[in-house]
Every structure is written in structure tokens, then in C-alpha cells.
Image (tube, rainbow over all chains, first blue to last red; front, side, top):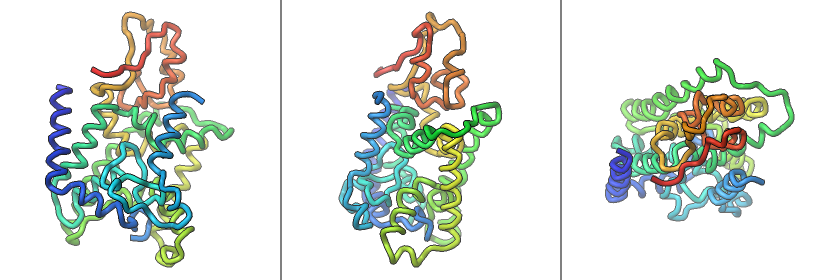
Length: 40
Length: 272
């Protein structure tokens, strides 16, 4: 069960990387998050 | 200094190693920001080198488009399976901050039946503010909004809000009611942390709620040797969290119980 879940996690991460998930995170994280500060 | 405190300090420094950001008031924009760190650490903290998993989850779920956040979900699943809430106890800078505040000598409010009930609040917060509200924002306005970061997250207020608005004149001009609200929430957490052990982690943190689901499954954590255990309950009496048994969903694997166990029946589990 645990090993299957690890495979699922790795699969999701790999698919997310392949479909641009890192770019989405990078885009959000490299600009000041106004919501986090309490402005936006 | 014990091993856990040292690990907490090293991870807090590693998460926030962009020291020049604290002088210039500018955030790190390198490619490491595409990688989520396991603990709660705002990506708009001037020192942050990585991304906050909660902020990333919300913005990936409902930002400019609505989609399943495979990358962040996969990482959160992996972190949970590997470490469970050891992340809270060992690798979270905001947890460390609360623990240091708790060391200030003030009257302390001990755990009780009410604090145990309040631990369920974080599941509601996760569902409403991390999952539902960003989607509702997207469906009603066409652009998602990280509702947890916006209305609750005290890590964002302390690490990014107060820091950046102190260092950055242009940001100060945009402050209003939302900033006051977030500052009040953060101030409440700081004050509560003086009298309670890790109030944010116990009652509000969506990451803790998520990682807690994996505590019994995770590769690393804490376990009891039932053959040695005499059920004296010394472990639960000394536990600073709201655990009903060692290693349950509230356990952050701090090891306090391990030190006190007269039978030495508690040990850290490592690996498969």
C-alpha cells in the first residue's frame, strides 16, 4: 500500500513537471504575493 | 542544543538563505523557487529560496486556470509518505518560531479536552480556505485567489508582510483593512504561542492536517514497542501536542515521549 502510494506520488510529480507544474509554481513564487502580505 | 532543535535551525536557515533579500527588500527570483519546501515558509519572505507548498497548491489549483495540481499534490503526497508530521516537528520554520516563543517564561495553558476538539478545526480550514475558496474565486471572477494565504496565514504576515512593508516604501502605500486583519491574526498567534505549545500547528495549519494523515504510514516517525509498553501513560502526560496515542495524527515526532519512557519502549522508526 505504502509503496503504491509512493509510486503514485512520484507519478503525479513527474506528470506535473511534464505538464508545466514547476513553471506555474515558479511564476507565482518569483513575484511578491500580495495576498500573502495582506494587500491583494 | 539537541538534534531536533539543530535540524529546525538548519532547515529554517536553508529555506531562507537569501540573506541579501532582508537588506534590499526584494525576493529571490531564481529557479529554485519552482521547488516546494516541505514546511510552511512563505515564498514572499525576502530570504526564501523555495516555494511554500500551501501557496503553490492554491495557485496551481485555481490561478489563471482551473486544473488538478499534479506537481504540488505529488510532492505533498511524497513528503507525507516519507516523513509525516516529522516535517512539523523537525523541518518547519514556523513551528520553530512558535516553540521559541513558548520558551518565554509566562503562565502556560496546558492541553485539555477542548484543545483536543480544536485540533479538528484545521481540517475545516484546509477544506474551505485551501480547496474550496480558491475554486469559488476562480468560478466567480475568472481568477483564483489563495484564500488561506490571503485571510489566515500568519507565516506570510510575519515573514513577508511585516518584513517587506518595513523594507519597501511602495508596498506600504497599498496597506489597508486586509493587512490590519492579517496582522491581528498573526499577533494573536504570537501571543497564544507564549502561553500554548504550537497553537497554529495544533488548531489551524492545513499542512499539519495533511501530513498528520500519513503519520501511521510514513517511513520516518515514532513507534511504540508493544511488548515493552506497560501503558503507564507517562508518554501522553508529557506530550506537548494533543496526542491520544504516540504517533497518532497530532504527533509531530518531537521525541519528548521517547526521552521520558521508563521502559524505553518508544523509538524512531526509520525506513521501510
